Image (cartoon, rainbow over all chains, first blue to last red; front, side, top):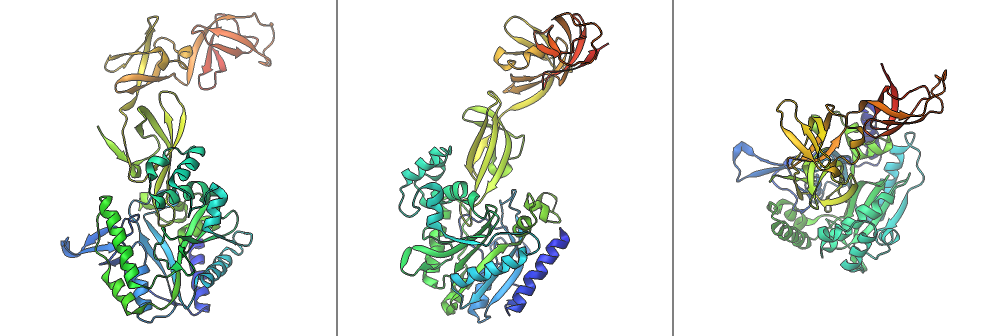
Length: 313
Length: 188
C-alpha cells in the first residue's frame, strides 16, 4: 500500500505538471480557522499563550485563496488536513487532501478536469464504467421521492419513518439542512458511484459552504461532490468571491455555533481581506487521497491505506 | 450516572437505550460532505436479544448501562428462581425464569456459567459452551451400529432433547455443544 500511495501521488503530480498547474505549500498550522459548525479544528498556541490560538487546518482552502487573490494563477496542493472528532471506517482525524484551484474555470470545466484526473488514476488499477453527472435535486428525488427544495419537514419525517428511521424526527426537528444531510447520507449516498465516479452538482442554497449562488436559480449553489462506492471522495465549488457574502456566511456559522454551545473562533480576516482585494473567478475542489486509494484498491477501511492510522499513530 | 458520547462508541460497550440495557455491535461514523455528522449504530438489546439499528447525531450521549458478565456456579432451581454463586466470594444471586429461558435446558448443578448482571440483578445466563449430561431416556439402539448415521432423539437429565448416534444408550454420559445443541461425543 505504501508503494500504491507513492505511485498515486506521482501520477497526480504528473497530471498537474502537464497542465502547468503550480504546486504550492501553505501553513498547516495557522492563526485562522473555519467557522463551519460541522467542522472541529484541533487547536494549540504558540509559547503557551491561549489568547493567541493556532489551528491545525481542516483544509488548505483559505490559504490557497489568499494565494489566488495575490495573483498565483492556478495552483494545487497535496497536504495533510486535520479534523477533530472524525474517526471511523472512512475517517481518520489526520488525512491527506489533494486540493486545486483553476483560475478562469467554471463548475463544468472543473468537473471535466476532475473526471479526467480520476479516470487517469483508476486506469490499470480498477476498471470503471464512464462517470455520470446528476444534479442534487434529481438524485434526492429519485431515492426519497421528495423534492429537496420544496418538501416540508413533515414530508422529510414521513420518508424517514417509512424507511425505519423514526429517530430522524428528533435529530433533525425543523432544521432543513440537517434533514437534507440526514436523508442524503442515509437514503441517497449509498446508491451513488456504483463502479463509476458519480458527480452530484447544484446543491440547495441552504447547503452553500463556500460556493457561489447559481446564476438564474438562486435556490441552488454551484457546488459539486464526487462519489465512488457510495463514498464521498471530494467537494468542489465555483468559488464564492464576494467578501460581504463570505462575511455573512461566517456570521451565520457563528450564530449557529453559539446556539449549539460550540467554541466560536474569530473570523479569518486575512481571507476576507484577500477577497476584498479580489479573488479571480475560479473553481476549486478537494479530493481525499486516502479514500481514493481505498476505493481504487477496494480496501475495507481508510486505516488500510495509512502507515499508522489514528489508533496507533 | 455515567454518559458516553458517540465518539467513544465501540463494539461491546453497554449502554441504555429506551430504558433497556444494550450492547453495541457496530458503530459507523457517517458525515455527508461538510454537513452534520451521524453515527449509525447497531445494538443488541440484552433483555430481548433483539438487534436494533439507530442513528445518532454525532456528539450525542447515552447513559452507560451497569452491566457485567460474571462467572458463576449454578447451584439449584427452587421451583421458581435459579440460584447462582460467585465461587471466589460465595456471593449468591437468584435469576428470574425469563433470564434463563434459553439456558435452562443445559444447566447442570455445579457447572460454571456466565451470568450477565444488570444493576447487580441477573439479566441473562450463558451456559458453558460444552456440557456433560446423562441420558435419561432414549430408544434402544441397533447393536453393531457405530456409524453414527441417522441418529435418534435422547432426553437428557436437564430435560433437553438432542440427536445422538444409534449406539448411545440410556444412562450414558454425553458431551453436547450448547451453542448448536449438537451431540459431540460419548464421555467415558
